[in-house]
Image 1 (cartoon, rainbow, N blue to C red):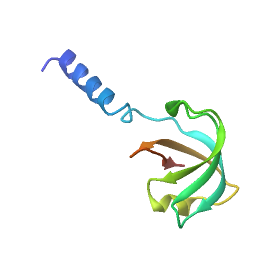
Image 2: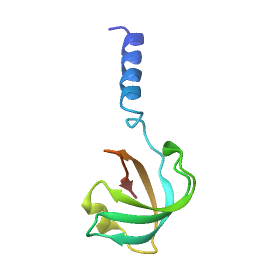
Image 3: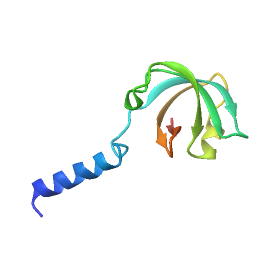
Image 4: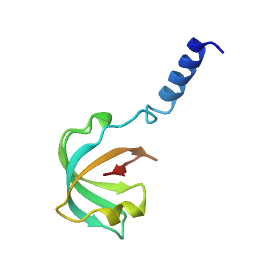
Length: 94
């Protein structure tokens, strides 16, 4: 395959899956509430540009239960979020 064909194929794949394969920027936020039973975090966050969402406080589900062990109420975090199965989900925390 030529380089152009490979590049166009990769671009088509990224567009087909909604761009979620692109690297996401971490966004600053503050954990307001941890709900381990429901696998949810309430986060006051800066704008989520990949989701066209302004800064606000909202409830997210987490992609993995272990993420809840990394955070506590009042903690400043950096995180990524994306739509997973129709739900806005925290996909990474650092």
